[in-house]
Image (cartoon, rainbow, N blue to C red):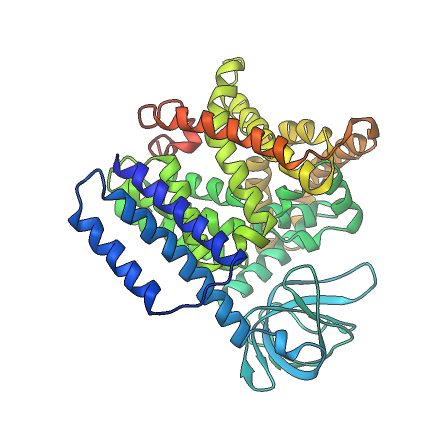
Length: 476
């Protein structure tokens, strides 16, 4: 068995161990430790053909141990013990605060301390005062209640006091970027550009958010691997030929600076890990299977948040769409006209991601709008241009605050045209599919996808891959 195949299978075993440990309670004891040691030693003693068995068993045990230790830690240090008690909570505001539809000022705090004791997890705060900003450390009093949505716990009608107004450097940089955009553009362009640059979805007016949700474009203003890929590719193309080592270091700084700037959501964290693997492989000249990269990235994100594979729909859809792109996009692109290769590549990526995720979305929610296909194929090719133009307008707004609004007027008008088109698509109610496939149909669909993936995997390295999936092609 080839080494990449062993790595992929071991990663799958780790994920299966996490799922098993989540659904069935296991108590850590000496037997598990001995079993793990025996499996690890056997991997070195047995013949090459039999060696994979203890490797896979050991990987499965690692997955079980990972989720078990995580759940035990949450049980001992989580917020569940403080539910429905009036407490004093301290924490640092993460992400952009916003006003909800009920005129509550909402923000998330991290590094939570409840009545002087550090707790695992984040907490949502709802209050009436807008004095708190991202990066501030706040002291909150109120009762903690569990909620179904992330982050799982919330304080309503909270009394908030600011403990520290010192913002981290990255938050200050994002605030300066926001100021430049506000000076250069008007709504809905300001919120839209903030969204595609750093995922500030809350900056969009509610009607614009509803429009993007209705036409299947909410992912555009939620920070994702697409945003990060564009930044890394542009940066590498500028520096790689002149300064190889420096381009690697600066690109890694850019990648993880962007991850921290945007709050480290599951999608951007996945993109950051994958970009790092690709950059290192490209620098050292090592060919890297895209399937191996996806497997290692999935396990890497689960090490940080083991419950994501079960509880986080965003994580599930992210890897479904990514796998669909790798397997199906080259096939779709070969069937499209070759006259506009970049546009056909983007169209094939969009279609592949939709094919991989639509059945699961129907299974979860029972409805899907086909206008999402049209909106994605029309708008996605313009996103790199809009990101570049929006970043330029942010710089102009910081340097020329008095004339930035005039210079940014064409971009504001372009975004107006885009939203007029999206509003038209939103009005087409006849394209909504209402159906909910059962588990058997869902399994058949994804078994077929796996079979196609196995066939694609056994091709030569990079054969059939598009330029955005091949790091060597990406950086030319």
